[in-house]
Amino acid sequence: MKTAKRALISAGITISILAILFLKVDLDLLLESLQTINYWYLALAFIGYLGLNFALAFRLFWLLNKLGYHHYSYWNILLFHFSSMILGDVTPGKVGYFGLVLLLKDVKTEDTLSVLTIGQIMDFIMKIVGTAAFAVILSGILLDFQAVLLAGITMMVALTAIASMLIWSEKSVKLLSFFAFGPLKKVTNIVKDVQASTSILKSELAKALLISIAGWVFVGAQWYFIFLALSPTTNTKFSFLFFFLLQAVVSTLAFIPVSLGGAGLQESAIVAILGIPGVGVGYTLALTFGILVRGMSILVDAGLGTFNLRKISLRGILEGKK
Image (cartoon, rainbow, N blue to C red):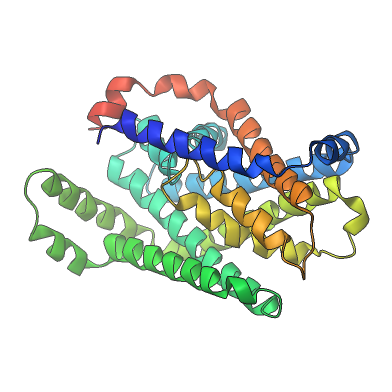
């Protein structure tokens, strides 16, 4: 199936899910929520999202520096990171984030892939821990969602294991070599090169994880303050820890390659979890919260990342980086 056709199908799925979600929205309540929004809390949420991206960009900058790429300033990497984020926002499974390979033109493909894969593994580990903790802490009111949470944990464990095997296990290369013909031969060679790059970074994994945890705290703050901006009277009911763990659970759905950037899937999960009787957030408020989370992310990513997209040529995307 051609890329354009896949993108069109994903766009159709995204629009359909969002349309279904909005069918049940109370428009009067939606307008009231937006009119009474607390902009101070919204500003704090904005700072939280910037903090997340500053942390993730620093992780990229740090790891690339360890691989010998000292000519990039942190500011360069930060802007390239935002460009990759906006690509992730509009592609199924957020795979567009790997467009960083095309932006870092003088960095070897295997080195960029190594750094990105390590980052994804760190993020998946936190999502596993966060989802498990969320399930345990709220086990009394999430009985109907235990199967969903277990499936989410299983998926993240599987993705983490596969990614780890590909970049660290020599056996994975031997296994791929049995099928190393045609396009798969190029994949096998890339995996070999990525493993060589990753071996240099083994001593930096603990630091990369700490940076990732810092980013997770910032995004937890973003979600917490967006909710307070919409409903400040409920600030005694929901703690920072609740949103700190909630985002680990529902953001996992964004990696399912169905809708664009997980749009619709993530919001559906937010509405479902916040609407549980033991949590008790109204449908319209929950969906408004989910849309604001996504809207803020896309606006910031686009504002700081769109300029560098001009450096990605159509030919580069179709032919790949040498």
